[in-house]
Length: 289
Image 1 (cartoon, rainbow, N blue to C red):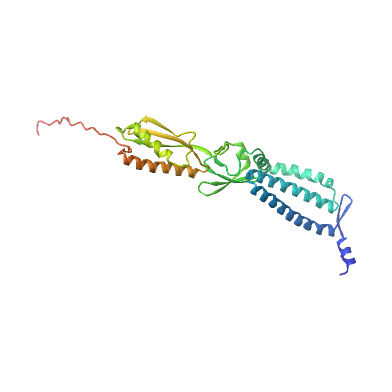
Image 2 (tube, helix red, strand yellow):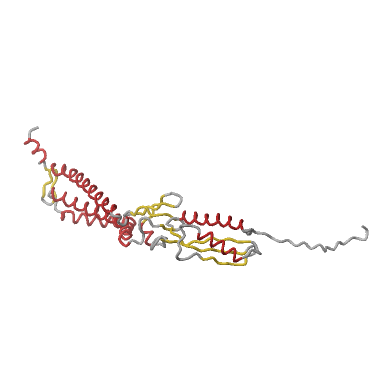
């Protein structure tokens, strides 16, 4: 096939838009532009991400920048494609308006989640790496997408939470300001135990843990004279961003308390009941017995 026949083949008019003839060459040009445009976009976004990561920038800011760059790139690629194939953008004004109206009625939830996703990424009430409590689920944010947010639950299961739910409902963000969280350990000792010594041992078992912060200081409280025990509670802060860290720390303190109580002959109380039996019972005998 010679060059003249190739030009004639590519010049074949397929259809016309706003008095602009769209040839077969224009149609074949579209996938080429999209392919190289997408390839360049991925390379550019990857390059920017790598540079920002080496500079220890905020992962949330990097994620937001990736989204913005992709939206800008897609817009530029579409406009460039239309310009190269000589299709004016005004030709799609009426069609895009009709599509927008129909799409708006049929996809309100999708649009709501999409806008909520951009609000989350821009205002940053929730960031990548935050530890959230949503309804009965607790987990760490791994990714914020335009429609949903991916959360890795403490048991390893991944949750996809619609972005609108994170904005419209109450969400507990344990690490919104910092990664400091407060928790407590309760213990009951038998009546007759030296309460001041018990308080000292509880404080010792707590401050020996390395991840517990020094400020604010742990506080030991003689909580109550219980039915079966003298109740104590120690409250402390630690640097932990996951629920597992809290559970492990409480367990470590309990292990250490058991050792210290055993060394000082302090008994951890357990439920018990005292039964009093009245032995003065009157037995009535019949006259015929």
